[in-house]
Image (cartoon, rainbow, N blue to C red; front, side, top):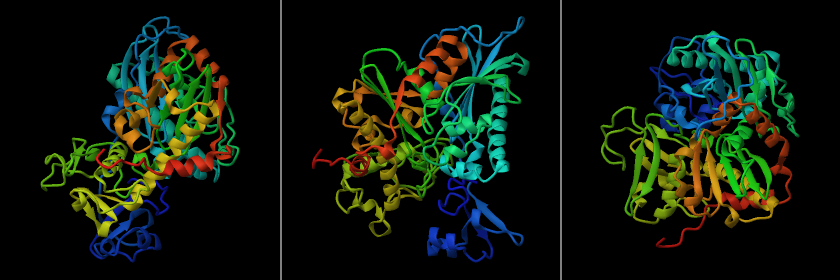
Length: 508
């Protein structure tokens, strides 16, 4: 079951249909579900107390998009100068691990040659305690038992991931002599068993900032990359390392769009960093029919001048319904982050939504409006509601605010940006034009925007293979200037402006 809200009855993602006589709805059911849904026996499973035998129908939880595992490939040959002792005979392998809020990615590398032997990705099982960092931290600080459960879950998942990699590569556990770890500061601390209480309250101070080698039961010597601040973690440092932000003269913006978004800006030899808490909207949370990228998810939406046309990730159930603007073969189950951003851009272009995010009855695609104008039908059984669009505005407003504040701190405007790098799986699949059209990114030439995949695990691989890469990571973390958005004097003004969408000129 999907429980992005941490089983608080706030997200609808754990919806089930009780077959037969349904129990009385709870207050959360009454708030989240329509009268028609309640009458048909739908209930929030996280609120449904089982006091008798029940038969329920559930929607299978979505699996991680298998394409994501390949997004962390190194751009070219890596320097190989391993810091870990090598096996005197036989192979010496290394395990690079990226622990994200949503997913866990791993790679197995040959420490002598730098060759990548296997990659794999899986979901982070901590998600049962909530989709966002603060929800999980709230659970962790309830006591050592709760914190220990989160640590156990993520370590067990990492060990299972390593086992999968060994199987793919035909390798043995004793051949793995070293590991590297990246992740946001909360995931980094929970995996290592470090205190996290201070991360749940201002000023969100990490227990450890420098990179060091840890002894973690069940793993070889593990180097955890340094963190910059409470919500700018080792994954951001690793992304900066992989992107080469410690070299060159260009002005570069790096944005990792996710539940906890991070923004880096290199200008005039300085590196600026901030955290932009976007929440889980781009991962499908807080969106009524949102889902992670996987089979059955709408991943792209465009306006063809007359109607909305959607693209669905293949591999799900086949569609038997006509219409809906889809391919006619893949049935849509929901919408993922890239599709959500595309949909907003398409609605703006079609005149179905104004710059404030309000749905309107204008344009040739007005027949798509549903629920009395409070929703847009994207495909049979999949709608995007006015509330969904408000959640998107908050998420993209947070990311854009981080970008604008860093530009102001550096004393430059968007025109000075030579490159905009999009890190992470979401950044790899979103359309650059939609990112600009919706205001997620500043108005720059889409040709300057480059997806760089999972730069976090790419940086973890570099630090696993080379002493000098570890030194570079340490220098990047030490030299970064962290900007706290909440205390910046311009933040409120910038955030309010960032909530709106860019105005679309008639006929554009």
